[in-house]
Amino acid sequence: MWNSSAEFFAMGGYAPYVWCSFGACALVFLLEPLAVRARHKKIVRRLQREVLAEQFDQKGSK
Image (cartoon, rainbow, N blue to C red; front, side, top):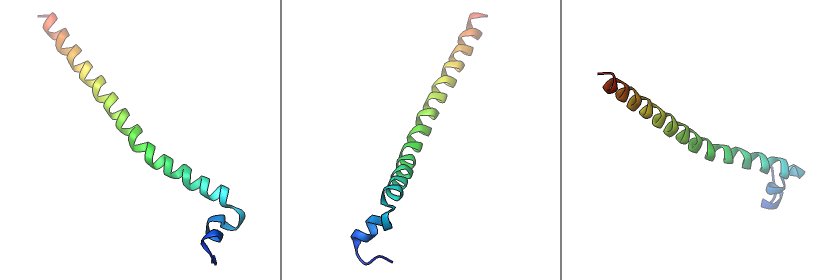
């Protein structure tokens, strides 16, 4: 139990560890969806290129 907001933010002397941990988690929570979206777009582009290459190969062999 903390008696003031300053004591809360000091976290009993463990503030650097506690707040850096919260910051690291928040950063991961923000960056992970962006990374997933980028990987998804990259995979979709690669699959589209493969489909176009297959279509080109089929037209060229006729």
